[in-house]
Length: 178
Image 1: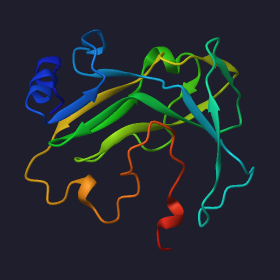
Image 2 (image 1 turned 45 degrees about the vertical axis):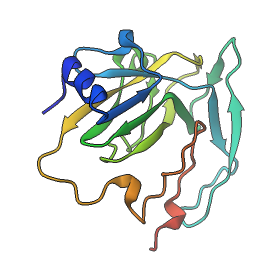
Image 3 (image 1 turned 30 degrees about the vertical axis):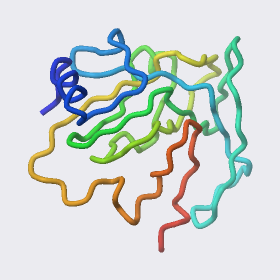
């Protein structure tokens, strides 16, 4: 079941969901709009290796915006820091962003119960697009969980994205054994 606007407010009041900063005008009927942070990053190497720690180069979005180009993976970050202790957060693109040809996540739309951080966005574009810090970029939708959660994401030994960061975080695939 998806939480309504009122249920999201109640979960925030109970401490089950944290959104910082929270702005009431970003709360939709059954979602919360998150905004693009100032930091972007791109991978340094043209060829990425899933078994290696691929380094990234930071980009700061200037006041007059930054042009994203096709054929490149950009890592972005939400302005909002979020926590979800009893609900599964899903990050979905906004239709107005998609209509600009911007994809905000390649695969990682679902968060885990216990995820506490800014969201790293996996951004790609179909044609050049100028983006701005603070623009609405995605929406969070919260689902109820049936049953008790055995281990929150924030308590998992294998969790790779627990360190709080307001900057995009590169892939940590290289930490997996394969």
